[in-house]
Image (cartoon, rainbow, N blue to C red; front, side, top):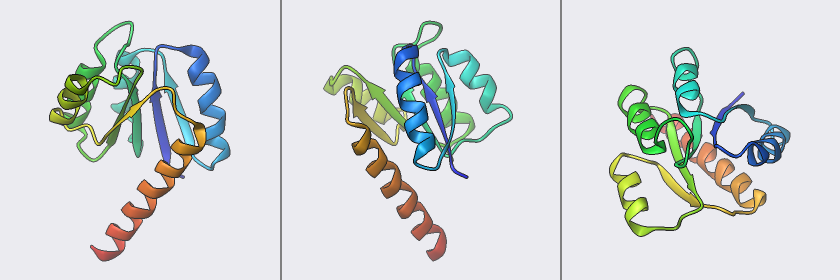
Length: 127
């Protein structure tokens, strides 16, 4: 089963999106703090991390940098309420795989996840 790691400081967001993602057939791990998510990564390797930048304990950019440095195989999708071109550029420079602006419709996320895994499966078949 594919695993999605959610990191967001809004508990309400996590409680709304986690069950939907599970309903789509994915396993979900969710954290309100970046440090706890990084601890999780020491023994778990999710397929995709959905990472909010505004975390209460450490910068989301720091979580992005550490994840991509230690675990480059994990796709990191930055999720932010700020559609700031400079923020987007900084995230991409740190090797974020995508940048999603909140709010978004759950159906849009479902399609993005399906497309990502279909593309990844095709690449694995070719390789």
